[in-house]
Amino acid sequence: MLTKRIIPCLDVKAGRVVKGVKFRDLRDAGDPVELAAFYNEQGADELVFYDITASSDDRAIMREVVERTANQIFIPLTVGGGLRTVEDMHRMLQVGADKVSINTAAVLNPKLITEGARRFGSQCIVLGMDAKRVTVSSPVRWEVFTHTGADGGRGTGLDAIEWAHKAVELGAGEIVVNSIDADGTQAGYDLELLRAISESVTVPVVASGGAGAPDDLFQALITGKADAVLAASIFHYGTYSIRDVKKFLLNKGIPVRLEVGKP
Image (cartoon, rainbow, N blue to C red; front, side):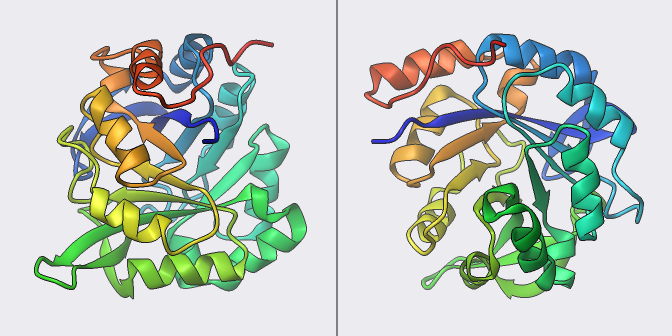
């Protein structure tokens, strides 16, 4: 089994890290630069930085904050939010991002995935997906939502599984699957959604939305078949440390790296 990645997520609004439940009732979690440095020292495998209202506010991502964040870490950094063109991607890579994540822009202009992959390589292009269950009985269906930084987002009519498959065909090298239903609830990931997407694509899938305890991350990796797990609330508010989670996973037989993030 390949080494699994533990990835803290910084949802940034107005220059501060925030976290809510299903994108609502946001509360402050700290300074993104300070948190990035902390997680780097704690042994995070990667870091994700989302400017969560850039798309809904129709503005560019906060370049200066991204640059200061990148300067504090020695682990891969993925940046997303408000990236609408290949030049937007290039600017983020120039200031220190290793990968760029596109969600709303990819739905509105799927060719952006291909254009980014051709210029920077598929390994740099991450599809961010916010999905919500729209049917409960079999067959279960999840719909892709965009503009999720404002009022819960907008439904697109796109089937999440079909969109994941298409995005990979277009050139996406990784998919972050976030369950809107589970986001911020700390009640566990949507394992059914994760498994459905993991089994339908050939690129790494990152679980997002719902982590409340180390066992939730374990279940996402085993039952959900994810390649990596992203979490926010349990790390930001000190419920568990990254080392706590990694030791738990190691004891469960999941290969993880305890020492990362050093220069």
